[in-house]
Image (cartoon, rainbow, N blue to C red; front, side, top):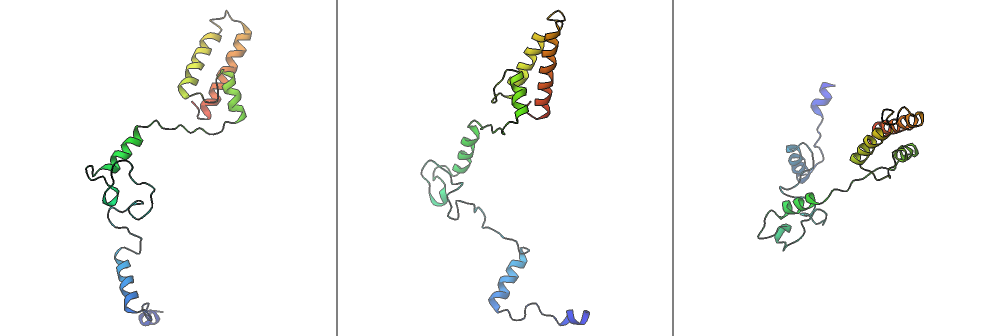
Length: 151
């Protein structure tokens, strides 16, 4: 095996251009590279291009070379869109038990839970069993919503 490896030439049959290209790729470990500062808008696509103002060479505003960062800052100031997953039927039922809509925020759920617990606590209702059953249902609903990650 050692003798075979000693006589094996990986570069046999390669011309000088192919050999030079291989050597250049060897410098970076055969990984893809980009020119410094290159990004999606620098090489022809419009995604990620800075918007607003007069764009000079490379998409930058001549008077504001940091236009890209200003655009990012503007996007950061916008209200983030809260994406909520589709609720399961039991999660909807739990929200109904707390008298809330499907779009209720974490703070609203927590506040409504506290309000209902105070209202239906046995000490506030003189030990009424109907109130105790409602309280149990409210606590179970809240615990489920908490476990599901909605609180």
